[in-house]
Image (cartoon, rainbow, N blue to C red; front, side, top):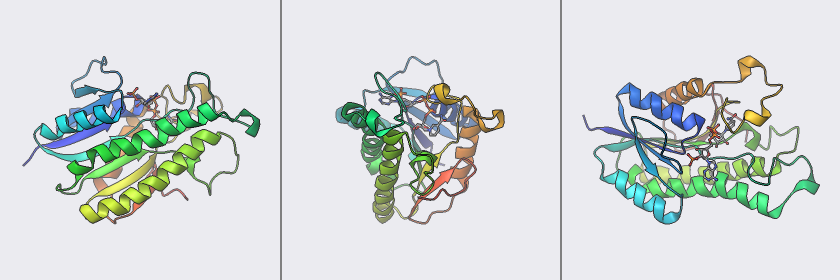
Length: 236
Ligand SMILES: NC(=O)c1ccc[n+]([C@@H]2O[C@H](COP(=O)([O-])OP(=O)(O)OC[C@H]3O[C@@H](n4cnc5c(N)ncnc54)[C@H](OP(=O)(O)O)[C@@H]3O)[C@@H](O)[C@H]2O)c1
């Protein structure tokens, strides 16, 4: 049987847990793309600044490795950063912060997906997941706030639906999901974990297990599925 490749973009808490799980499974040759490749690991690391040139070079490098691309998971996302935090009120909106969050949470994942498109064409049943968030649901938004983060994930979902339709035309066995991991104990959620009940704060390993099972079992239907960690659909 031909070797299977799994590619994970972003080596944060969830990305690394998934890479470790898939490497240990022995089913995949695992490739991880990150700004930081100093992490000691058994998978193949690719250092990237996520520029167009870098993504193109890395995609070509992975394409040249043996096997077909069976799993692609894009995990990049930020909630806060240098000089910005999730907004609670209109008066806190900042042009630079909004642009930064949209760049990392929406633009970067879509360009990463585009960079790997050609490798998804002639393969059997590839499964692609992009890390979204429940707070990107417009229908589920009853609390408001977190303007930029919410909007970046809503926009991501819309672009992923476009991509699901387009990719179905080039590979009818492909499935794409926008995935909400639940509140997971990683650097991203660390400052916001107060008040989260212990049984609702997931380990990255638990989330990696859930996502892996969902990708293994989900049927192909030519649509984007917006799913939570339990595999339950989230309203748009
Ligand atoms: N943790 C949660 O509770 C939670 C809940 C809902 C949704 N999510 C989503 O899950 C995904 C993974 O998050 P995580 O919990 O694993 O968080 P994390 O450990 O903080 O990882 C953050 C990820 O975002 C990337 N990233 C951070 N800053 C970046 C920048 N300036 N430019 C490019 N990439 C950058 C990192 O890539 P590098 O490897 O290149 O650093 C890493 O892959 C995110 O999309 C997040 O929105 C998380």
